[in-house]
Length: 61
Image 1 (tube, rainbow, N blue to C red):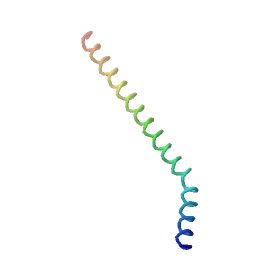
Image 2 (image 1 turned 45 degrees about the vertical axis):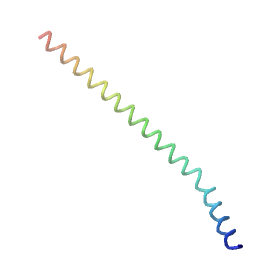
Image 3 (image 1 turned 180 degrees about the vertical axis):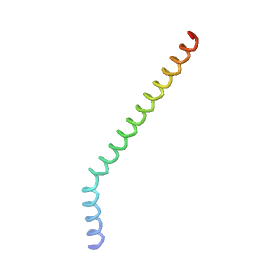
Image 4 (image 1 turned 180 degrees about the horizontal axis):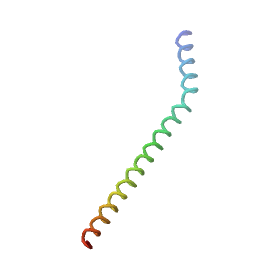
């Protein structure tokens, strides 16, 4: 019984110490995904604008 309590105590302390860093890593991954999506949307918007400008230019010329 004493060994089991020692094991659970060590596990609890380990989880207590690692929880903030795991939470921070998850937060960083979420921010990275948001940045990546925003960059892809910006690139798609620029590509669309470039295609529309080329189409207007060919109509005029």
